Amino acid sequence: MIRLAIRGFLAGEKQFEDLLVLNDDSKLESTIGSLANDHAEALAAHALHMIEIEFLDEPNPLARFFRFGSDPRMMRRPMIDLTKEGI
Image (tube, rainbow, N blue to C red; front, top):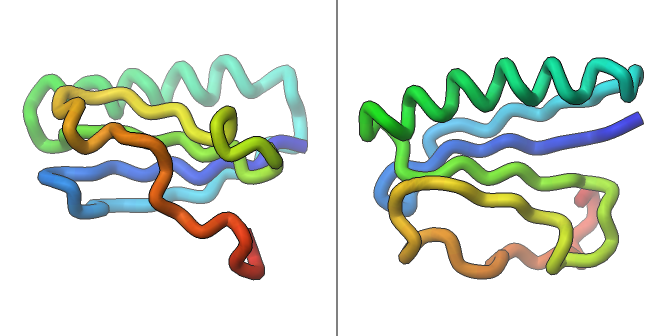
């Protein structure tokens, strides 16, 4: 099982957050590929400036986040307290 949180940001403000649970690892590539196409189009249209994918089960905060986008000022290391319950 893989648990992901996918967030879209515009000017540093979170616009959406989708939680995704994949029970079948074989569907990871096709699911992520489909989502990536949608998100890349939003970035290209400047509807979003950054997409963040958080691998919720990754204990290493330096490997837990993957970010891509068009505003590098907003893509700094995580500013999330990973010690909070429920994360």
